[in-house]
Amino acid sequence: MRKNIKSKTLLVLAIAVTLVSFTTDCSNTQNPRPKGFTIEKDLLLVQLDCKTDVDDLHTAAALATLVAGSDFSRLKYHAVAGTYGVQEGLYVPPNGLLQLSFGSNWTDAHNSSVAAVEKVKTIAKETLNGQGDIWIAEAGQSDFTAELVKVLQHDLPELNTTDRIHVVQHSDWNEKSTSPGDLDFVKQNTDYRKIPDGNAVGNGSPGFRDPEYTNWQDDVKDPKLQEIWKYAIDLSNKYNGKEGRYNNKAVSSGGLDFSDLSEVCAILGIADIKDVGEFFDRYGN
Image 1 (spheres, rainbow, N blue to C red):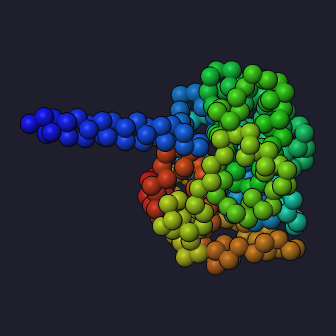
Image 2 (cartoon, helix red, strand yellow):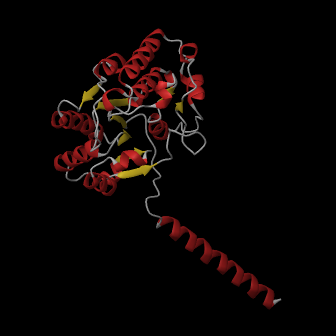
Image 3 (cartoon, helix red, strand yellow):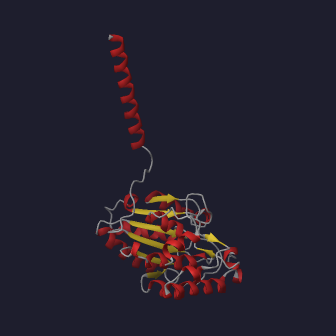
Protein backbone atom coordinates (compact mmCIF):
# COMPACT_ATOMS: atom_id res chain seq x y z
CA MET A 1 0.00 0.00 0.00
CA ARG A 2 2.79 2.40 0.96
CA LYS A 3 4.60 1.52 -2.27
CA ASN A 4 1.48 2.42 -4.26
CA ILE A 5 1.14 5.74 -2.43
CA LYS A 6 4.81 6.48 -2.97
CA SER A 7 4.52 5.60 -6.67
CA LYS A 8 1.49 7.83 -7.07
CA THR A 9 3.30 10.67 -5.28
CA LEU A 10 6.31 10.33 -7.55
CA LEU A 11 4.01 10.28 -10.61
CA VAL A 12 2.26 13.48 -9.51
CA LEU A 13 5.60 15.17 -8.90
CA ALA A 14 6.86 14.09 -12.32
CA ILE A 15 3.77 15.50 -14.03
CA ALA A 16 4.10 18.76 -12.10
CA VAL A 17 7.75 19.13 -13.09
CA THR A 18 6.84 18.47 -16.72
CA LEU A 19 4.09 21.10 -16.66
CA VAL A 20 6.39 23.68 -15.08
CA SER A 21 9.07 22.93 -17.64
CA PHE A 22 6.56 23.24 -20.50
CA THR A 23 5.25 26.54 -19.16
CA THR A 24 8.77 27.89 -18.81
CA ASP A 25 9.67 26.82 -22.34
CA CYS A 26 6.55 28.53 -23.71
CA SER A 27 7.21 31.73 -21.81
CA ASN A 28 10.75 31.81 -23.16
CA THR A 29 9.76 31.22 -26.79
CA GLN A 30 11.13 34.03 -28.90
CA ASN A 31 8.47 36.47 -30.13
CA PRO A 32 5.30 34.54 -29.18
CA ARG A 33 3.28 37.43 -30.69
CA PRO A 34 0.02 37.06 -28.78
CA LYS A 35 -1.29 40.46 -29.84
CA GLY A 36 -3.83 40.91 -32.62
CA PHE A 37 -5.31 43.92 -34.39
CA THR A 38 -7.79 45.90 -32.29
CA ILE A 39 -10.17 47.68 -34.63
CA GLU A 40 -11.33 50.14 -31.97
CA LYS A 41 -7.93 51.80 -31.58
CA ASP A 42 -5.22 50.39 -33.89
CA LEU A 43 -4.05 51.84 -37.22
CA LEU A 44 -3.42 49.91 -40.45
CA LEU A 45 -0.80 51.32 -42.82
CA VAL A 46 -0.75 49.80 -46.30
CA GLN A 47 2.55 50.69 -47.96
CA LEU A 48 2.67 50.19 -51.74
CA ASP A 49 6.03 50.31 -53.52
CA CYS A 50 4.53 50.56 -57.07
CA LYS A 51 7.93 49.74 -58.57
CA THR A 52 8.00 48.11 -61.01
CA ASP A 53 5.15 45.59 -60.72
CA VAL A 54 1.59 46.75 -61.39
CA ASP A 55 0.18 44.33 -58.81
CA ASP A 56 -0.02 47.19 -56.29
CA LEU A 57 -2.72 48.79 -58.45
CA HIS A 58 -4.88 45.70 -58.05
CA THR A 59 -4.00 45.62 -54.35
CA ALA A 60 -5.26 49.20 -53.95
CA ALA A 61 -8.55 48.27 -55.62
CA ALA A 62 -8.88 45.19 -53.42
CA LEU A 63 -8.20 47.28 -50.30
CA ALA A 64 -10.89 49.76 -51.38
CA THR A 65 -13.26 46.80 -51.82
CA LEU A 66 -12.43 45.46 -48.38
CA VAL A 67 -12.91 48.72 -46.48
CA ALA A 68 -16.16 49.51 -48.31
CA GLY A 69 -17.91 46.63 -46.53
CA SER A 70 -19.64 46.82 -43.19
CA ASP A 71 -17.16 44.38 -41.60
CA PHE A 72 -14.48 47.08 -41.57
CA SER A 73 -16.51 50.27 -41.43
CA ARG A 74 -14.67 51.26 -38.21
CA LEU A 75 -11.22 50.47 -39.56
CA LYS A 76 -8.59 53.20 -39.25
CA TYR A 77 -6.25 52.87 -42.21
CA HIS A 78 -3.95 54.92 -44.40
CA ALA A 79 -2.30 54.06 -47.72
CA VAL A 80 1.21 55.14 -48.72
CA ALA A 81 2.51 54.97 -52.30
CA GLY A 82 6.15 54.92 -53.39
CA THR A 83 7.58 52.93 -50.47
CA TYR A 84 10.16 51.19 -52.65
CA GLY A 85 13.67 50.06 -51.83
CA VAL A 86 16.76 49.55 -53.96
CA GLN A 87 15.19 47.78 -56.94
CA GLU A 88 15.81 49.19 -60.41
CA GLY A 89 13.11 50.03 -62.91
CA LEU A 90 10.47 52.67 -63.51
CA TYR A 91 7.71 53.69 -61.13
CA VAL A 92 4.06 52.89 -61.82
CA PRO A 93 2.22 56.15 -61.00
CA PRO A 94 -0.91 55.27 -58.96
CA ASN A 95 -2.03 58.76 -57.90
CA GLY A 96 -5.31 58.94 -59.81
CA LEU A 97 -6.32 55.47 -58.65
CA LEU A 98 -5.49 56.17 -55.00
CA GLN A 99 -7.37 59.47 -55.12
CA LEU A 100 -10.42 57.67 -56.53
CA SER A 101 -10.09 54.81 -54.06
CA PHE A 102 -9.23 56.62 -50.82
CA GLY A 103 -9.84 60.34 -51.33
CA SER A 104 -7.30 62.20 -49.21
CA ASN A 105 -6.57 59.14 -47.06
CA TRP A 106 -3.23 58.35 -48.70
CA THR A 107 0.28 59.76 -48.90
CA ASP A 108 2.71 60.12 -51.83
CA ALA A 109 6.20 58.99 -50.78
CA HIS A 110 7.46 58.89 -54.37
CA ASN A 111 7.60 62.67 -54.88
CA SER A 112 8.89 63.43 -51.39
CA SER A 113 9.83 60.62 -49.04
CA VAL A 114 10.86 63.03 -46.27
CA ALA A 115 7.54 64.88 -46.33
CA ALA A 116 5.67 61.58 -46.48
CA VAL A 117 7.47 60.23 -43.42
CA GLU A 118 6.56 63.38 -41.49
CA LYS A 119 2.92 63.16 -42.53
CA VAL A 120 2.56 59.48 -41.69
CA LYS A 121 4.43 60.03 -38.43
CA THR A 122 1.78 62.53 -37.36
CA ILE A 123 -1.01 60.07 -38.18
CA ALA A 124 0.80 57.25 -36.37
CA LYS A 125 1.43 59.36 -33.26
CA GLU A 126 -2.28 60.05 -32.89
CA THR A 127 -2.89 56.31 -32.69
CA LEU A 128 0.07 55.63 -30.40
CA ASN A 129 -0.91 58.44 -28.03
CA GLY A 130 -4.38 56.92 -27.92
CA GLN A 131 -2.84 53.61 -26.77
CA GLY A 132 -3.34 52.00 -30.16
CA ASP A 133 -0.75 50.01 -32.11
CA ILE A 134 0.56 50.50 -35.65
CA TRP A 135 0.21 47.62 -38.11
CA ILE A 136 2.14 47.91 -41.38
CA ALA A 137 1.33 45.79 -44.42
CA GLU A 138 4.48 46.04 -46.51
CA ALA A 139 3.27 45.75 -50.09
CA GLY A 140 6.86 46.51 -50.97
CA GLN A 141 10.13 47.03 -49.13
CA SER A 142 11.09 48.10 -45.60
CA ASP A 143 13.01 51.30 -46.39
CA PHE A 144 10.08 53.63 -45.67
CA THR A 145 9.19 51.66 -42.56
CA ALA A 146 12.73 52.09 -41.22
CA GLU A 147 12.57 55.86 -41.62
CA LEU A 148 9.13 56.01 -40.02
CA VAL A 149 10.23 53.98 -37.00
CA LYS A 150 13.32 56.16 -36.55
CA VAL A 151 11.35 59.42 -36.41
CA LEU A 152 8.82 57.86 -34.04
CA GLN A 153 11.65 56.74 -31.77
CA HIS A 154 13.04 60.28 -31.86
CA ASP A 155 9.72 61.92 -31.01
CA LEU A 156 8.59 59.25 -28.54
CA PRO A 157 11.76 57.97 -26.83
CA GLU A 158 9.71 56.02 -24.28
CA LEU A 159 7.93 54.07 -27.03
CA ASN A 160 8.65 50.33 -27.14
CA THR A 161 8.53 49.95 -30.91
CA THR A 162 9.02 46.17 -30.83
CA ASP A 163 5.78 45.94 -28.87
CA ARG A 164 3.71 48.69 -30.51
CA ILE A 165 4.70 48.59 -34.20
CA HIS A 166 3.89 45.39 -36.10
CA VAL A 167 5.19 44.76 -39.62
CA VAL A 168 3.87 42.03 -41.92
CA GLN A 169 5.80 40.95 -45.02
CA HIS A 170 5.03 38.11 -47.44
CA SER A 171 7.68 38.36 -50.16
CA ASP A 172 11.27 37.14 -50.27
CA TRP A 173 11.82 39.42 -53.27
CA ASN A 174 10.67 42.46 -51.28
CA GLU A 175 13.15 41.62 -48.53
CA LYS A 176 15.98 41.21 -51.04
CA SER A 177 15.05 44.56 -52.62
CA THR A 178 15.25 46.42 -49.30
CA SER A 179 18.41 48.24 -48.25
CA PRO A 180 20.09 45.60 -46.04
CA GLY A 181 20.62 48.02 -43.18
CA ASP A 182 16.99 49.10 -43.25
CA LEU A 183 15.73 45.52 -43.27
CA ASP A 184 17.93 44.64 -40.29
CA PHE A 185 16.79 47.76 -38.46
CA VAL A 186 13.10 46.98 -38.99
CA LYS A 187 13.53 43.37 -37.91
CA GLN A 188 15.32 44.49 -34.73
CA ASN A 189 13.05 47.42 -33.86
CA THR A 190 9.54 46.18 -34.68
CA ASP A 191 7.40 43.11 -34.25
CA TYR A 192 8.36 41.80 -37.71
CA ARG A 193 6.20 38.97 -39.02
CA LYS A 194 6.84 36.99 -42.19
CA ILE A 195 3.85 35.14 -43.67
CA PRO A 196 3.64 32.74 -46.63
CA ASP A 197 3.68 34.30 -50.09
CA GLY A 198 0.30 35.61 -51.25
CA ASN A 199 1.02 34.66 -54.84
CA ALA A 200 0.24 30.98 -54.17
CA VAL A 201 -2.88 29.16 -53.03
CA GLY A 202 -2.89 26.70 -50.15
CA ASN A 203 0.29 27.71 -48.32
CA GLY A 204 -1.34 29.35 -45.29
CA SER A 205 -1.92 32.76 -46.86
CA PRO A 206 -4.75 33.73 -49.21
CA GLY A 207 -3.67 33.20 -52.82
CA PHE A 208 -4.55 36.44 -54.57
CA ARG A 209 -2.83 35.94 -57.92
CA ASP A 210 -4.99 34.30 -60.59
CA PRO A 211 -4.23 34.66 -64.31
CA GLU A 212 -7.55 33.05 -65.21
CA TYR A 213 -9.85 35.19 -63.08
CA THR A 214 -11.49 37.61 -65.53
CA ASN A 215 -15.11 37.86 -64.35
CA TRP A 216 -14.64 40.50 -61.64
CA GLN A 217 -17.41 42.61 -63.20
CA ASP A 218 -19.93 39.90 -62.32
CA ASP A 219 -18.76 39.82 -58.71
CA VAL A 220 -18.38 43.54 -57.96
CA LYS A 221 -21.85 45.04 -57.63
CA ASP A 222 -21.17 48.48 -56.20
CA PRO A 223 -20.87 51.12 -59.00
CA LYS A 224 -18.06 53.00 -57.22
CA LEU A 225 -16.06 49.80 -56.76
CA GLN A 226 -16.67 48.88 -60.39
CA GLU A 227 -15.20 52.25 -61.34
CA ILE A 228 -12.19 51.67 -59.09
CA TRP A 229 -11.52 48.20 -60.50
CA LYS A 230 -11.86 49.38 -64.09
CA TYR A 231 -9.42 52.21 -63.39
CA ALA A 232 -6.96 49.81 -61.72
CA ILE A 233 -7.11 47.31 -64.56
CA ASP A 234 -6.84 49.92 -67.30
CA LEU A 235 -3.87 51.52 -65.53
CA SER A 236 -2.13 48.21 -64.97
CA ASN A 237 -2.61 47.29 -68.63
CA LYS A 238 -1.09 50.65 -69.59
CA TYR A 239 2.12 50.13 -67.57
CA ASN A 240 2.54 46.35 -67.30
CA GLY A 241 5.86 45.38 -68.87
CA LYS A 242 6.27 48.80 -70.47
CA GLU A 243 9.68 50.52 -70.73
CA GLY A 244 11.43 47.75 -68.87
CA ARG A 245 8.88 47.46 -66.07
CA TYR A 246 8.15 44.00 -64.71
CA ASN A 247 5.80 41.99 -66.92
CA ASN A 248 3.20 40.51 -64.61
CA LYS A 249 1.95 37.50 -66.56
CA ALA A 250 -1.23 37.17 -64.53
CA VAL A 251 -2.14 40.71 -65.55
CA SER A 252 -1.05 40.33 -69.17
CA SER A 253 -3.31 37.28 -69.50
CA GLY A 254 -6.29 39.32 -68.30
CA GLY A 255 -6.32 38.02 -64.73
CA LEU A 256 -5.82 39.67 -61.35
CA ASP A 257 -2.92 39.97 -58.93
CA PHE A 258 -3.50 41.60 -55.54
CA SER A 259 -1.17 39.24 -53.72
CA ASP A 260 0.03 41.95 -51.33
CA LEU A 261 -3.43 42.08 -49.76
CA SER A 262 -2.55 38.77 -48.09
CA GLU A 263 -0.70 40.83 -45.48
CA VAL A 264 -3.78 42.95 -44.78
CA CYS A 265 -5.83 39.77 -44.39
CA ALA A 266 -3.28 38.40 -41.92
CA ILE A 267 -3.45 41.61 -39.88
CA LEU A 268 -7.25 41.78 -39.85
CA GLY A 269 -7.75 38.12 -39.00
CA ILE A 270 -9.28 37.01 -42.30
CA ALA A 271 -6.38 34.95 -43.61
CA ASP A 272 -8.71 31.97 -44.04
CA ILE A 273 -9.77 33.36 -47.44
CA LYS A 274 -8.60 30.82 -49.99
CA ASP A 275 -8.25 32.74 -53.25
CA VAL A 276 -9.45 35.55 -55.52
CA GLY A 277 -12.87 34.02 -56.07
CA GLU A 278 -13.55 33.63 -52.36
CA PHE A 279 -12.42 37.21 -51.73
CA PHE A 280 -15.07 38.53 -54.11
CA ASP A 281 -17.67 36.14 -52.76
CA ARG A 282 -17.17 37.72 -49.33
CA TYR A 283 -16.57 41.36 -50.16
CA GLY A 284 -17.54 42.02 -53.77
CA ASN A 285 -21.15 42.66 -52.91
